[in-house]
Image (cartoon, rainbow, N blue to C red):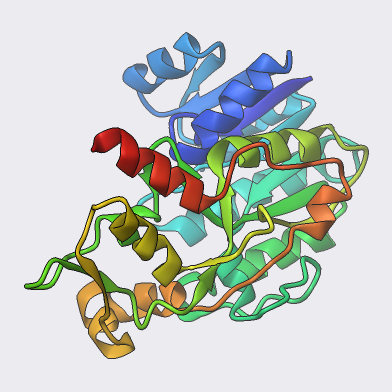
Length: 290
């Protein structure tokens, strides 16, 4: 398949690019600069330099592909960016069998100990903008899938570093986000990339998919894994209000969500994580750094 990809130099998008190229797909990566073009071409993609939110520029690119993946995550105006991409995809792919995979996020579901992929999201303020965009896409005549990744880790990147590299108190203890008892639903970036490919290759729309490795783990447990490797002297609850003050109210509000998902729907598609748990990642990284 010939696939248009946004975000090909980003954390998730670069992993998706590698996965698609390795599987034999032809990838056209939308980039904004010559430097980014060189980066994606070095990984086996064809670069298209331009502005993805320019409908007139993007339309002929969409017309020339079999499917598209939107994995870009701009630093600002994300709602306007995603709206522009979805508008263009609906216009180009509506009424066809060409497939589109859109990136959502686990936070949009709100708190829950058994999150259902197909449940209507209950998004906190930080990501509430995602919901109407995704709903409009899923209601359109597009063969669309919205992947909501859990907390992505791997390649020494991702939000896990908010725990492993969190500030220490005067006694060398890791300051937990809140009390640290909240579960985060996790997924390794390499496993997530395979899920994107599976969704793209699947015959038909899949609706919403939660990208979860099925092992929700508390923030406290991750921090304690750092302690066990000698990376800190212990852990201590920071408290929700202090975390909001340190990290910002909306961001902390998302990080404080207790979210557990088993990944049953994605497993039914034949997807199985091949990487170990986030604890294995932390232990391995801390051990190698010792």
